[in-house]
Amino acid sequence: MTRIVSVITAVHAPGAPFLPAAYRSLVEQRLPRGWEWQWVVQEDGKTDAVRPHLAEDARVSFGQGRPGRAGMARTMALSRAKGEFVKVLDADDQLTPGALARDVAALAGGSGAAWAASAVLDLLPDGTTAGFGGDPGEGPVERGSVLSYWREHDFLAQVHPATLCVRRDLLLALGGWMALPASEDTGLLLALDAVSRGWFTKEPGLLYRKWPGQVTASAAHTDREERAARMAVVEARALALAGTGWSFVPPRG
View 1 (cartoon, rainbow, N blue to C red):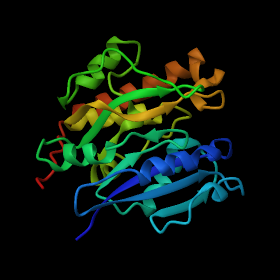
View 2: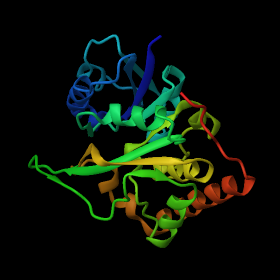
View 3: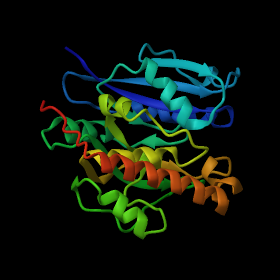
């Protein structure tokens, strides 16, 4: 029986021209025997700008809907996700070779992890890349450690939520991505951290594109009042989940 990793991509019209590069990075992935990927692309809106950039490939599922930001688009995409694992891939980013195989190994290899993340390289406009310092060590990310670090470092996590791969059942149990104008992936990361163990891979798994049109480059993203409100609700959700005492332990195999 084929096992599937569903790669979910939210996209809006300005980011559509980057989709072919994201697709190429998927095609170049080599998964363990018995595994396959599915690419679930969800447009945040309904335009004619996105579909022309997608390849004719039976593994690609395209959908559209009312605009509501990336979190809503990703959550709507879950309706078509068939995989037991769900991988995030933003439309303007690219996976590095072997990224999906490393995620599968982390989540299906008996580590007890319900989610996985990896190191990131910024992909700069001139085509060069730049790394980050301070990544955690390779291995388990114990429950609560992401929240503790995030609270002590100006609401910045030690792992990048754009690299998340997560068990689909846990993702659904948590309600998908948060209904926020931004930081919806950070909200998911901290919710996962509140109830389950993660895994961090030191080898970079993502090329994170830097370009003027990205949402995180907008002035609204760094507005102090909005950012404070986003962080407050992200923190409150994580603390509430931790307070329930619920611990998600994935089945073996």
